[in-house]
Length: 302
Image (cartoon, rainbow, N blue to C red; front, side):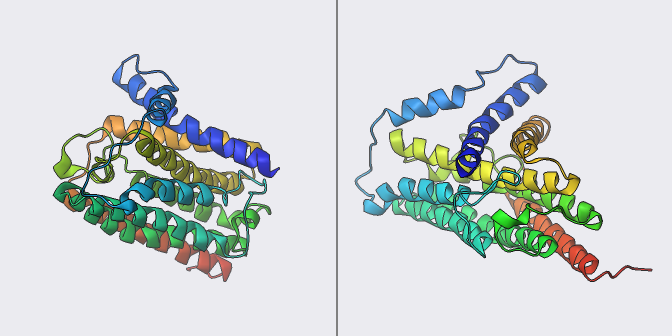
């Protein structure tokens, strides 16, 4: 079952960018690119060599491998519905959050190693947004642990939750979807299609990467997005009692459609508003956790 879990998670990671592109094209009235165009682009990158600036050190060259490795290991903790993930232990939800943080930290160090002022600005923004969104992620997984009574992703969705926690689970899934926008650098927080260095965040940190290194960074982004999306889909499936096989299509549909719709209908936030946006996610996560705590104690407001 672990192999099936890995296969479904991999397919979700490969399908989500295609759904985003097709959704954007449909809403814009365009034919759009091929559904698997992102795979062809990464294949070309993986077949190319890498060019390094003489100002960079060995740290810069190691960052893509570390970033991809942390995203891959973090994804192996995530179950698809009630399937068993490849890696699991008590408290693995904490390891999941800090694996993502480790990958972000490595990418920040790589950007600073270039000595570029533009990449330094992107690194400082990424560090700020990562520090702000991490409490929201930890609070969301703490809510899942509170509702289920387990601290391992493998056990969170094995038992059907009580009906009174349905709204709490749905709001937790909503928080996780909002976190996807921040962690994957999508509109309204960031725009992966922009080419203006002064307003770029994630993309500006990758300006000096090319070839196989850039391909690994893009694959890591797909895996990270799929892991968070699958976690949100598992939460929705658990709230309604849906079977395990509904989680993977739900992750692709919810994330792909939501990202595509938002990028087609909204403009990117001003940088000053991003902190408010992320802090709002954290406040909502804290409110959902507190509501779940009151329901756990059978306390109701008269």
